Length: 340
Picture 1 (cartoon, rainbow, N blue to C red):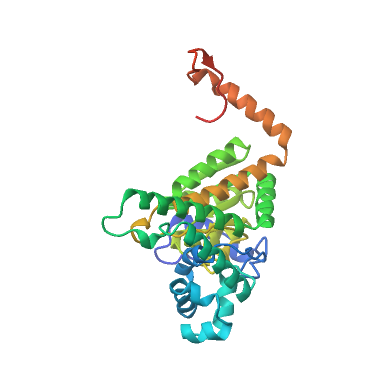
Picture 2: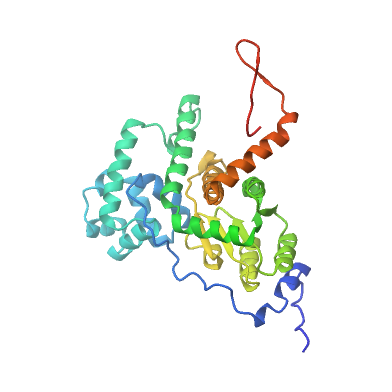
């Protein structure tokens, strides 16, 4: 039997990935739910809404905008009152709570109280505070606060069961392809480097053709980790969908639970960060992704703690001759260990 011809314009990597994939079943079932099973604990809901609103559909966005603009009033509103004020239904209010990872409307109101108390303590630490001629002290507060929010919200929303599952997959395959584009690429390189140091053969790339060829080469004996802030980048989604057809587990490191990347993924490690205006393209997204990287690699290495500690000592000794000695207060050399 001959293979069906390739569609016009289909690249070599797509042909390689298609192979006989249409005659295969997927290695694992598609995700049954678009939302994580574990809900976020009550936290700074205003920061959470800002981090999630770029992924909200219009009807939920109306409710989110009203909450962001009138948080003090919402604390004393019922579900029906908020729905009426925002021009939406009570069901939309409930869906918004679910969408941002809260257990319900009471959790939303409790979180708003936390947000308001925090804003009172640090009134200038929000993105809206940056305007023409904003002083450096305010900018420092805003940037630091956005980084704090990214770490806090990502830590709260990161599912430990998913982290364990990805760690187990990496221990099983011992091979990973880490794919990312644009500003997520440095995070992919950092993850690949850490995985190599943890004994996993890892390749970081922004080349879709190379990633596709490697997936076909390993034939299900590797994992694909895709890092994408939005989860809607065409190349990332297409690669993830094709990888699943080759029995390759796909890990999505992304922020939007509704994205096509999440729907194509076997596992999701969710990030949360908020950047807009002059902060658009800032580093909060990267910090959230790097937190996920550190958590994942630490869990992976802790599975064989004693062996990993011994391995780290050997690696440190191997690079020791290339490190210049530090000088202490007395001028005597000090011992160095780890890192750069």
